[in-house]
Structure formats: C-alpha cells, structure tokens
Amino acid sequence: MDPFSMVVAIVGIGAVASVARARYGIRRDRHGNEYPIKDADAERMREELKALKERVAVLERIATDTNRGVALDREIEALRSRD
Image 1 (cartoon, helix red, strand yellow):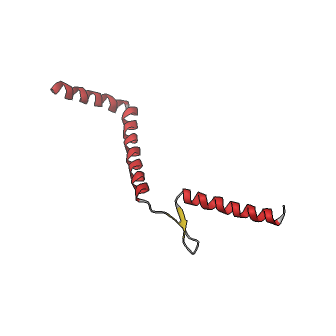
Image 2 (tube, rainbow, N blue to C red):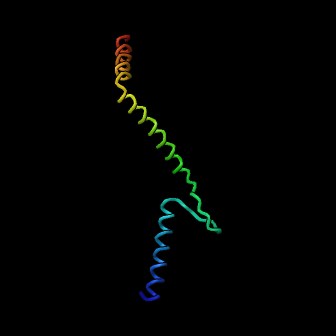
Image 3 (cartoon, one colour):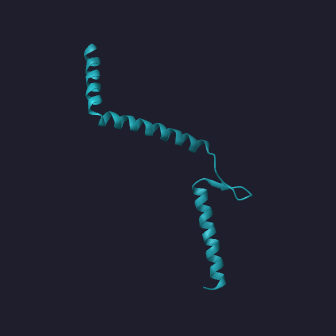
C-alpha cells in the first residue's frame, strides 16, 4: 500500500468515526473529552419511552398473572352490574 492510500484510508476512518459520534449525539471538547449532547426533544422522548415501558410492564404483569386477571375480571363485572 503506498503512502497516499494510507493517508486517504486514515482520513476516511476519521470521517466515519466523526459521523458516527454525531449520529449518536456525542461531542468532544477542545481537550478531547467526550460528552453527550443535551437535546430537549430527545430527553422528552426518552422520558416518554420510559413511561411506555412501565405501562407495558404493568400490562404484561396483568396478562400473565392468572389469579389477578380473574380477580380483575370479577371487579369489572361487579362495576358493570352496579349500573
């Protein structure tokens, strides 16, 4: 491999690494320390995703816990019969 090809390869690898860091929201300061980019929209989406995961966990627990599911059905039917 000639020196020119090596330089082009090194620059290409650096460019790909920079694009990957930007895509995943990582920046570097002038000292080379990496830190995540604070984005309000991304933070809001993370919180929403966390809430949705908690809701899915509750639904899974209701669906898989057979005794609780039967009791829940009874409670729902009792509420319906009250009307």
